[in-house]
Image (tube, rainbow, N blue to C red; front, side, top):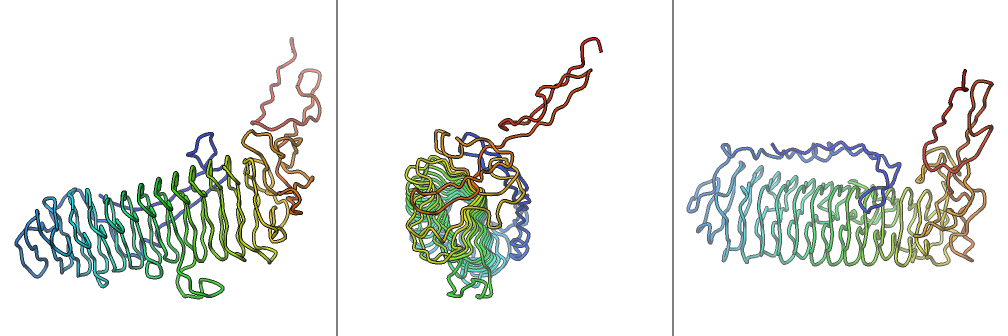
Length: 478
C-alpha cells in the first residue's frame, strides 16, 4: 500500500565524507498539515480490482479512448481510478491523456507514455484532487505532465526528455513525491503564486538542462530530494513576491522550507533561495560550480545546519539591504574561492547574524565594506548550549582552513570553548568576531587517599578530543 507519513528526529553527526550533516542538529518535521490540507490519499498499488482499465475504442461518459495504444488519446471525465494496460503513444494527438474531472486517479501500471505533442498528461484547471502514479516513463512531450488543479498528487513516476518540464504542478496544495526526472529542460516545477503549500519530497532530478527542482509557491516544503548535474540550479525555491514588508501580509503562506536535500555538481547553484523568505536547513551540498547556496531573498532567512564542501563559493548572498538573515550551525569547508561571499550593499545594522559555524576555507569571508551590518556572534552574547564543535556555549564561529591550521585551531583550548581574544573576520575590515570558538578544554578534578592512586593529580586542563575515562586501581595489598 502506498502511503506518506513522515516524522523525523535525528541527530546528524559530521563525518569525513560528504554525505553527513553537521553535528548537533535536531530537526523534527511533520507533514500532516500539508497532507491533511491537501485531502489527497495515495491509492493502493497492490491490486487493480477497483480500477477501470482504459480500453481502446471505448466511448462512455466516464472516459473516451480515441485510436489505439500505438497511436491514441484518452479523455477522462468522471471521478474514479483508471489504469493503462499497455504502453501508450499519443502521436499525432494533442494530448496523451486529458483529465477534465475531479477526484481522478490515473495509474500508469508500470507502462510508458510517449509522444510528440504538447502535453503527455493534462489536468485542466478545475480538475482538483488528481492523482498520477506508477508511470515507468513519460517522455518526448513539451510537458511530460501538467496539472493545473488544486490538491494534485504525483507519486512514483519517471519523466525524461521533455522539452520544457517533466512534472508541472500549477495548483495549490500539490504533493510531488518519489519521482525521477532527468534530461528535461526543467525536471520538477511548481508554479509561483498558485503553487502555494506544495510538498516536493524524496524525488531525484538530474541532468536537466535548466533546473532540477523549482517551486515558487509560498509555504512550500522541499525535503529529502537529490538534485545533481543539472545545468543551472539543483533546487530553486521561494514564495510569491507580494510587495509587503512581511510576506504574511498576502494572507497565505510565508516561508519556503528547503530541508534535508542533497545537491551536487550543478552548473550554477546547488540550492537557490529566491523571493521573499526561506529556511534552508540540514542540506548536504557539494561540488557545485558557482555556489553551494545562493540567498537572494529579501528578509527573514535562516540558513542552518548545512554541510557545504568543495563548492566554488559556499554561501553567496546578493540582494541589497537583505534584512534579518541568520546563518548558524553550518559547516563550510574547502571552498575554492570563499566560504561566504557577500556582494550586496547593506546599510542597516542587523542585516546578518552569522555565528556558530565552522569555516574551513583558504578564504573564509569575502565581502564589501558593509561590515557594520554584520554580527559574528550569538546575538545575546555567549549562551549555554552545545555548539557546532561540541563545546558548551553558543558564541562566535570556528575559524579554520582546509589544513586544520587556522586561527581557531592554533589557539589554546578553553573550558568555555570560546576565546575572549577577538578575531578580525577580514583583515583590515574592522569587523570582529568577539567570541570566536576554539577547541574545548576539559577540567578533570582528581584527588587521592592512602589506598587509591589517581592520575592526573589535582586540577588539570587537557584538550577535549573525546570523552575522558579515569582509571582508579586499588593500592597493592589493600
